Image (cartoon, rainbow, N blue to C red):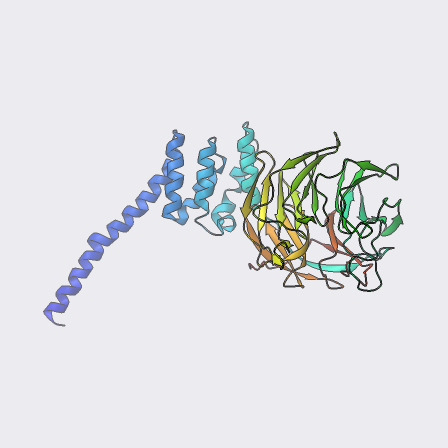
Length: 432
């Protein structure tokens, strides 16, 4: 080897040993210093430490950042949550699992905000495996129907209105039918029907009653503004205060003792959100959906918030299908965008179970169910093998560990199918 080459090699070794290695150690020492700073008495220093650790992105910071998710200071908690976003999949790491005992202990804290934060953190870390959905047939509906909402009240499932047709003919053969299904006995019973036929009404169950809002009525060729209330104990219907905005194919969800009717189509496609108070029989307008009108969307309520998913609009003369997820906070009356669906989709229904929203309907993959994890703000896909393909006109509900599907058939021939799937079989999660 030439002397010049040897000299160059020795020089490079010198740079590595005396310059680069100290720099690496200095960065590692900096990370440790900021980790130690998470325990400082001053909450401003703890907040700064969390913010800087998020920028440094050293995996050693995951455990300490999880520990301050239950900090007494809300600003420190927010900074830690933001910092953890720099570590994709942090909630599934060994460091996260090692923090579970400490978070469980924090559930006993005197501060209710600390207890709430601990519960949310545990909800992100301790997640039961997603389940492949294998469906089996149950007793058929007495009346074949599509576009007929289903709701759970007490121990039974009620299916309301819809289209019942032996041939494919849009907006024909609407029914006022109300039928109740007992999953325990697998038996159906016909109940007193509504006063008018309705297809695509918004339906909610609350405090022993079934609330039916709007829906399309072919006799008037328009969306209803009428509200009918079924008293289960009396098998009797009553009138409620009419909706401020007539609509069909809206969604109704119950939250904090009120029923929110969201979107739909009436005189044009709607962004409207209106809350009905059963106690006062009165309506109140709320902030509209972001940023556009929609119908055939899914909506659920969970942990004090409302989630609206997908849907479509023909407002501009052509179909626009949405992929967005919106979260509504009733305290602030504001909507917030969340992670979008794997692809745009409409004609949807959904159930929420343990912080996960299972979405069904006119998806691009008919043998899949798309699952939105609220705590992780992330979508997954799981296998869903139905006994008969779904088309988007079915209804889905959750009952005691099972998801039930009712009807379908679009505009005809209508289906009397009832099937159920248990959430029990572990399966590999595949991200979109």
